[in-house]
Image (cartoon, rainbow, N blue to C red):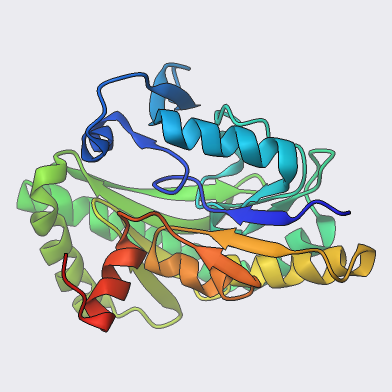
Length: 257
Protein backbone atom coordinates (compact mmCIF):
# COMPACT_ATOMS: atom_id res chain seq x y z
CA UNK A 1 0.00 0.00 0.00
CA UNK A 2 1.28 3.47 -0.88
CA UNK A 3 1.75 5.78 2.06
CA UNK A 4 -0.77 8.63 2.20
CA UNK A 5 0.42 12.09 1.23
CA UNK A 6 0.12 14.73 3.93
CA UNK A 7 0.42 18.33 2.73
CA UNK A 8 1.24 20.36 5.82
CA UNK A 9 1.37 23.99 6.73
CA UNK A 10 4.02 24.37 9.45
CA UNK A 11 3.84 27.46 11.67
CA UNK A 12 0.85 27.35 14.02
CA UNK A 13 -0.18 24.00 12.56
CA UNK A 14 2.59 21.63 13.67
CA UNK A 15 4.50 24.02 15.93
CA UNK A 16 4.50 27.59 17.23
CA UNK A 17 6.73 30.16 18.87
CA UNK A 18 7.35 29.97 22.61
CA UNK A 19 5.08 32.97 23.14
CA UNK A 20 2.15 30.98 21.78
CA UNK A 21 2.90 27.84 23.77
CA UNK A 22 0.89 29.28 26.67
CA UNK A 23 -2.38 28.50 24.88
CA UNK A 24 -1.67 24.81 25.44
CA UNK A 25 -1.38 25.20 29.23
CA UNK A 26 1.76 23.15 29.13
CA UNK A 27 4.95 24.03 30.94
CA UNK A 28 7.13 21.19 29.69
CA UNK A 29 8.45 19.41 27.81
CA UNK A 30 8.86 21.59 24.75
CA UNK A 31 10.41 20.02 21.68
CA UNK A 32 12.44 22.36 19.43
CA UNK A 33 10.89 22.45 15.95
CA UNK A 34 12.60 25.39 14.22
CA UNK A 35 15.69 27.49 14.85
CA UNK A 36 16.33 31.22 14.45
CA UNK A 37 19.16 32.66 12.37
CA UNK A 38 21.55 32.18 15.30
CA UNK A 39 20.52 28.51 15.32
CA UNK A 40 18.81 28.88 18.68
CA UNK A 41 15.40 27.22 19.22
CA UNK A 42 12.58 29.59 18.31
CA UNK A 43 9.54 27.42 17.60
CA UNK A 44 8.43 24.41 19.57
CA UNK A 45 6.11 21.41 19.60
CA UNK A 46 4.12 20.18 22.56
CA UNK A 47 4.43 16.54 23.56
CA UNK A 48 1.20 15.83 21.67
CA UNK A 49 2.39 17.61 18.53
CA UNK A 50 5.73 15.83 18.70
CA UNK A 51 4.00 12.45 19.00
CA UNK A 52 1.76 13.33 16.05
CA UNK A 53 4.70 14.34 13.84
CA UNK A 54 6.64 11.19 14.72
CA UNK A 55 3.60 9.07 13.84
CA UNK A 56 3.25 10.86 10.50
CA UNK A 57 6.94 10.39 9.70
CA UNK A 58 6.57 6.63 10.15
CA UNK A 59 3.28 6.16 8.31
CA UNK A 60 3.00 8.86 5.61
CA UNK A 61 4.88 10.96 3.09
CA UNK A 62 5.08 14.51 4.46
CA UNK A 63 5.22 17.51 2.13
CA UNK A 64 5.35 20.96 3.73
CA UNK A 65 3.30 23.72 2.13
CA UNK A 66 4.59 26.78 3.91
CA UNK A 67 5.13 30.52 3.81
CA UNK A 68 8.67 29.87 5.02
CA UNK A 69 11.35 30.50 2.45
CA UNK A 70 13.98 27.99 1.42
CA UNK A 71 16.49 29.33 3.95
CA UNK A 72 13.91 29.34 6.75
CA UNK A 73 12.71 25.80 6.08
CA UNK A 74 16.29 24.60 6.28
CA UNK A 75 16.14 25.53 9.98
CA UNK A 76 13.07 23.36 10.65
CA UNK A 77 14.13 20.28 12.62
CA UNK A 78 11.46 17.94 11.21
CA UNK A 79 13.26 15.64 8.71
CA UNK A 80 11.22 16.19 5.57
CA UNK A 81 12.66 14.04 2.77
CA UNK A 82 10.19 14.42 -0.08
CA UNK A 83 8.96 17.41 -2.06
CA UNK A 84 8.59 20.83 -0.45
CA UNK A 85 6.42 23.82 -1.35
CA UNK A 86 7.85 27.00 0.18
CA UNK A 87 7.50 30.78 0.12
CA UNK A 88 3.69 30.72 -0.19
CA UNK A 89 4.00 28.51 -3.26
CA UNK A 90 6.66 30.47 -5.14
CA UNK A 91 9.13 27.59 -4.86
CA UNK A 92 8.79 23.85 -5.34
CA UNK A 93 11.77 21.82 -4.16
CA UNK A 94 12.38 18.30 -5.43
CA UNK A 95 13.26 15.42 -3.06
CA UNK A 96 16.92 15.78 -4.13
CA UNK A 97 16.95 19.42 -2.96
CA UNK A 98 16.90 21.05 -6.41
CA UNK A 99 14.36 23.64 -7.49
CA UNK A 100 11.71 22.38 -9.88
CA UNK A 101 13.02 24.22 -12.94
CA UNK A 102 9.70 24.25 -14.81
CA UNK A 103 7.91 25.89 -11.88
CA UNK A 104 10.80 28.31 -11.35
CA UNK A 105 10.64 29.49 -14.96
CA UNK A 106 6.87 29.93 -14.80
CA UNK A 107 6.88 31.87 -11.53
CA UNK A 108 9.87 34.04 -12.46
CA UNK A 109 8.13 35.15 -15.65
CA UNK A 110 4.90 35.96 -13.79
CA UNK A 111 6.74 37.93 -11.11
CA UNK A 112 8.75 40.09 -13.49
CA UNK A 113 6.07 42.84 -13.77
CA UNK A 114 5.88 43.05 -9.95
CA UNK A 115 9.54 43.61 -9.16
CA UNK A 116 9.64 47.41 -9.03
CA UNK A 117 6.27 47.73 -7.31
CA UNK A 118 7.17 45.25 -4.56
CA UNK A 119 10.32 47.21 -3.76
CA UNK A 120 8.53 50.55 -3.84
CA UNK A 121 5.71 49.31 -1.59
CA UNK A 122 8.18 47.93 0.94
CA UNK A 123 9.98 51.29 1.07
CA UNK A 124 6.65 53.11 1.42
CA UNK A 125 5.68 50.88 4.34
CA UNK A 126 9.04 51.36 6.05
CA UNK A 127 8.88 55.15 5.66
CA UNK A 128 5.29 55.19 6.98
CA UNK A 129 6.22 53.15 10.05
CA UNK A 130 9.13 55.48 10.81
CA UNK A 131 7.06 58.62 10.29
CA UNK A 132 4.27 57.33 12.56
CA UNK A 133 6.72 56.19 15.22
CA UNK A 134 5.44 52.63 15.03
CA UNK A 135 7.98 49.96 15.94
CA UNK A 136 7.17 47.70 13.02
CA UNK A 137 9.11 46.48 10.02
CA UNK A 138 8.41 45.42 6.47
CA UNK A 139 10.72 43.14 4.52
CA UNK A 140 10.78 41.52 1.11
CA UNK A 141 11.14 37.78 0.83
CA UNK A 142 13.42 36.85 -2.05
CA UNK A 143 13.96 33.57 -3.90
CA UNK A 144 15.86 32.46 -7.00
CA UNK A 145 18.66 34.89 -6.19
CA UNK A 146 17.28 38.43 -6.12
CA UNK A 147 13.71 37.85 -7.31
CA UNK A 148 11.31 39.67 -4.98
CA UNK A 149 8.43 37.37 -4.08
CA UNK A 150 6.26 39.17 -1.52
CA UNK A 151 6.26 41.63 1.40
CA UNK A 152 5.65 40.75 5.03
CA UNK A 153 5.20 43.21 7.89
CA UNK A 154 5.19 42.64 11.65
CA UNK A 155 5.01 44.76 14.80
CA UNK A 156 7.85 44.40 17.30
CA UNK A 157 5.20 44.26 20.04
CA UNK A 158 2.54 41.66 19.25
CA UNK A 159 0.19 43.36 21.73
CA UNK A 160 0.04 46.42 19.44
CA UNK A 161 -1.00 44.83 16.17
CA UNK A 162 -3.94 47.26 15.93
CA UNK A 163 -1.36 49.97 15.13
CA UNK A 164 0.07 47.82 12.38
CA UNK A 165 -3.33 46.98 10.91
CA UNK A 166 -4.56 50.58 10.98
CA UNK A 167 -1.51 51.94 9.16
CA UNK A 168 -1.61 49.07 6.66
CA UNK A 169 -5.24 49.99 5.89
CA UNK A 170 -4.16 53.59 5.20
CA UNK A 171 -1.37 52.52 2.88
CA UNK A 172 -3.58 50.07 1.01
CA UNK A 173 -6.14 52.83 0.50
CA UNK A 174 -3.41 55.17 -0.74
CA UNK A 175 -1.55 52.77 -3.05
CA UNK A 176 -4.31 50.33 -3.90
CA UNK A 177 -3.75 46.59 -4.04
CA UNK A 178 -4.44 45.83 -7.68
CA UNK A 179 -2.58 42.68 -8.64
CA UNK A 180 -2.01 41.72 -5.01
CA UNK A 181 -3.94 40.01 -2.26
CA UNK A 182 -3.40 40.71 1.43
CA UNK A 183 -3.22 38.03 4.11
CA UNK A 184 -3.48 38.84 7.81
CA UNK A 185 -3.00 36.37 10.65
CA UNK A 186 -2.20 37.67 14.13
CA UNK A 187 0.99 39.80 14.04
CA UNK A 188 1.59 39.19 10.37
CA UNK A 189 0.50 41.02 7.23
CA UNK A 190 1.63 39.83 3.82
CA UNK A 191 1.17 41.49 0.42
CA UNK A 192 1.41 38.80 -2.23
CA UNK A 193 1.20 38.94 -6.02
CA UNK A 194 -1.82 36.99 -7.19
CA UNK A 195 0.41 34.52 -9.01
CA UNK A 196 1.86 33.42 -5.65
CA UNK A 197 -0.53 31.04 -3.91
CA UNK A 198 -0.06 27.71 -2.21
CA UNK A 199 -2.92 26.16 -4.18
CA UNK A 200 -1.30 27.00 -7.54
CA UNK A 201 1.91 25.26 -6.53
CA UNK A 202 0.06 22.26 -5.11
CA UNK A 203 -2.06 21.93 -8.27
CA UNK A 204 1.15 21.79 -10.32
CA UNK A 205 2.77 19.26 -7.99
CA UNK A 206 -0.30 17.02 -7.74
CA UNK A 207 -0.39 16.70 -11.52
CA UNK A 208 3.07 15.17 -11.34
CA UNK A 209 2.48 12.98 -8.30
CA UNK A 210 -0.79 11.54 -9.61
CA UNK A 211 1.04 10.29 -12.70
CA UNK A 212 2.97 7.99 -10.36
CA UNK A 213 -0.01 6.81 -8.27
CA UNK A 214 -3.49 8.12 -8.97
CA UNK A 215 -5.21 6.70 -5.91
CA UNK A 216 -2.85 7.74 -3.12
CA UNK A 217 -4.82 9.22 -0.18
CA UNK A 218 -4.28 12.98 0.04
CA UNK A 219 -4.70 14.79 3.35
CA UNK A 220 -4.07 18.46 4.15
CA UNK A 221 -3.51 20.33 7.42
CA UNK A 222 -3.41 24.10 7.87
CA UNK A 223 -4.29 26.81 10.37
CA UNK A 224 -5.00 30.03 8.49
CA UNK A 225 -7.64 31.29 6.09
CA UNK A 226 -5.06 31.47 3.33
CA UNK A 227 -4.41 27.74 3.74
CA UNK A 228 -7.95 26.87 2.66
CA UNK A 229 -7.03 27.40 -0.99
CA UNK A 230 -4.66 24.42 -0.90
CA UNK A 231 -6.59 22.38 1.67
CA UNK A 232 -9.60 22.10 -0.61
CA UNK A 233 -7.42 20.37 -3.20
CA UNK A 234 -6.97 17.49 -0.75
CA UNK A 235 -9.41 14.61 -0.38
CA UNK A 236 -9.52 15.20 3.37
CA UNK A 237 -8.29 18.17 5.38
CA UNK A 238 -8.12 19.35 8.97
CA UNK A 239 -6.98 22.21 11.20
CA UNK A 240 -5.78 22.78 14.77
CA UNK A 241 -8.55 23.30 17.29
CA UNK A 242 -7.16 26.74 18.11
CA UNK A 243 -6.50 28.48 14.80
CA UNK A 244 -7.65 31.27 12.53
CA UNK A 245 -9.39 28.75 10.30
CA UNK A 246 -11.27 26.96 13.09
CA UNK A 247 -12.26 30.33 14.55
CA UNK A 248 -13.78 31.34 11.22
CA UNK A 249 -15.59 28.02 11.01
CA UNK A 250 -17.03 28.52 14.48
CA UNK A 251 -18.17 31.99 13.47
CA UNK A 252 -19.83 30.79 10.26
CA UNK A 253 -21.60 27.94 12.05
CA UNK A 254 -22.58 30.19 14.97
CA UNK A 255 -21.16 27.70 17.45
CA UNK A 256 -20.44 28.60 21.06
CA UNK A 257 -18.12 26.99 23.53
